[in-house]
Image (cartoon, rainbow, N blue to C red; front, side, top):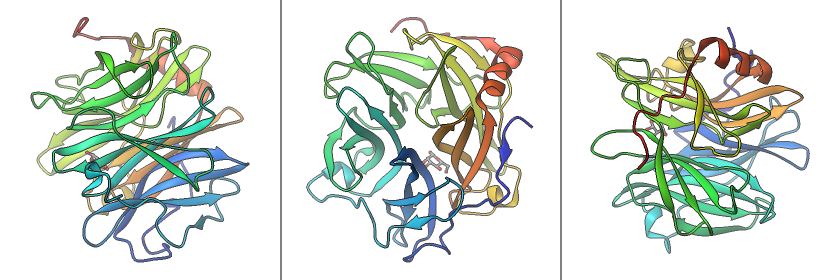
Length: 312
Ligand code: BMA
């Protein structure tokens, strides 16, 4: 098995939360001041989500969870009407701040929005970046020819492919292209979406993504890999044929949505990639692998990038 589940899974549960919560899942992850910091999606008993910080000195144990929500919907931001979900976090060196892309639930549907922060204490909202329906978004931790790049997953004509778009200022977005389409017939035939932010490696940007297949008893959310060109990230170099993680354990089947392994955070530490994922839309779990093994796997198991859509 390429990705190993942590023995102590699940690491965060609604039972262990300091205030009432229906589920705690799909966290953004960063290393900040020597600690692992998770911004966890918490669903309350109205069915609305907010984000709360949890920190650990080693990324596995001794979690300290904020005693109240860190980011609640802001009534001045109409796009957050029904909550905040599924954050992805990157450090932007040129702005010297973290960018948190998250799904805000607006009356018009789910939409990708941006919050920036330096310290996870004070936050600046930048509103929605693209129109709904759109989810599963992250910025790259660097710019390309002076432009920021955003990976996201709009749903257009009922089709759910991963797209990439560019912006000079994080405000106006263009140069939209399909990056990774669903693969008819495959395990990722119905929907695909970015997992954690893209991970820079010597061979290219490693993408961890989720793929969905609908079955007679619901959707299965599994995890695949792809590699993008370092300087031209709209070029897909490889894409795994097989999934590398899929629901198997009890905690991945027992929850609000059974059959879901949904990574949203990744931390690279001494060559090991630690993935934080939501299990069954209920808890937070960890699976890890050596980065070099993931890259080897892409060359052994992968197919050359099949964009299939051409230029926009
Ligand atoms: C996706 C997102 C995730 C969720 C997953 C499985 O569409 O909404 O937040 O974990 O479905 O239910």
